[in-house]
Image (cartoon, rainbow, N blue to C red; front, side):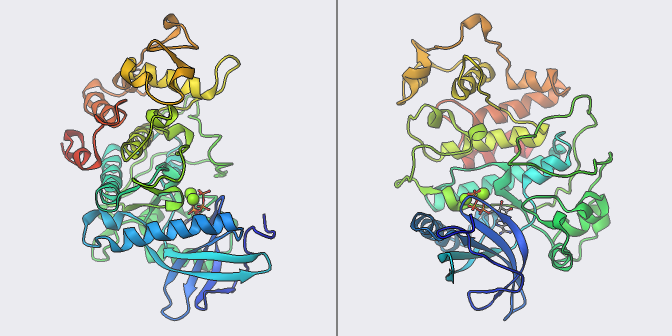
Amino acid sequence: EYCTGGYMPISYKTILGDKYQVVRKLGYGHFSTVWLCENIINKEYVAVKVCKSANIFTAVAQDEIKLLQCTRDKNPDHPGSRNIVQMLDFFNCRSINGSHTAIAFEIMGPSLLHLIIQSDYQGIHMPGVKTIVRQVLEGLVYLHDECNIIHTDIKPENILIKVKKSYVTRMVSTTKKFYDLGVLMPKSYVAADSFTELCGPQDDDVNDDVFEWTRNRSYPEDYSIGNGGSNRRLKEGNLKGPLWIDPNIEVKIADLGNACWDDDHFSSEIQTKQYRALEVILDAGYSFPADIWSLGCVTFELATGEYLFNPKRYQRCSATADHLTLIWEVLDGIPPYITSKGNRAIRYFDSGRLRHVEDHYLKIWKIEDVLVDKYDWKRINAIPFASFIESMIEPDPQLRITAAAALQSSWLNE
Ligand code: ATP
Ligand code: MG
Ligand code: MG
């Protein structure tokens, strides 16, 4: 994809935008490559996202910049604005492949997907889950209520962990491939003590020892994530409990590359499959509640290490039909006034029932029971957590909990 219209060829020490000197690659996506750079004027490290050069990518990048300008400028005093990864600068770069839009961001560390992988798909200890979910909700209140923005791609990969300067310094001083944040978890990150050192409390007067990142198992040699998480399965028989993380952890929502305005959508097909809201699947129109659905799925995944919904294609059943079946089973049915709305509803529902599966094949399995039966939770813990998740995956988007209301929920505040 390093061709005309594609990625910009970039090497070590290249200077981007007259002042950002390239140190190493951090990651890449569909639209761009992302680089750790040093601002040679103030010596600060930043992440620079250099977009592909074809017109279509430039147009997407321009939209991303407008959305990021809004999140930067709308209300910097709002408590949730700090939970959105900040744009610092944007500019244009020329290469043999064309003209590329580039965006400089505050530097961040690994994503929540890295954390889930580090837990060996066992999930994160509950106080850590609450801290993370609270901060993502704060970020969503800001996006939704202040900026009028729908993120449309809330998932673990797009929530990044803030790291200390020492973490960045280590990235600068090694050239090893496993430090490529976009692909692998750095090896040193695996040790509990260095985890604290690199991602622990930002405040230097806080005694690190107080905030121990407790780990109680060894990790396999190979940390390869593979292609976008296709190998994300719980290893059978490996039930050693959740990963303990420092509840001081700080996270931010990243990648506004697919985001849109509530009154100006760019696409009717949004979200990554596993996190796709019911109204999006049915093509019944969407708004802010679609982000809440995704966060409900993410919350379950953080706590258990596994997807809430992982639809698969079968011989007689499309992935979408499977997805609707899974939702039906978890919610104990979907009201007919919901299944009759939406441009795709007729394809999957007939008189309020699933077309492709007979009732007696359905296995109703509510979240509370999933947690008890499959994950060995105590029922007393499962009840409040399940009701929190259920409020976020309410099938009617009008009745679904808002980000602001979710922040007041009893589960988060007990
Ligand atoms: P996608 O295909 O997901 O739309 P994209 O081309 O829009 O990708 P991003 O998702 O914004 O690009 O970034 C690609 C990767 O670069 C991220 O997954 C992450 O690993 C890394 N990255 C992005 N922003 C930062 C940042 N501020 N600090 C550190 N790493 C970052
Ligand atoms: Mg992304
Ligand atoms: Mg993107």
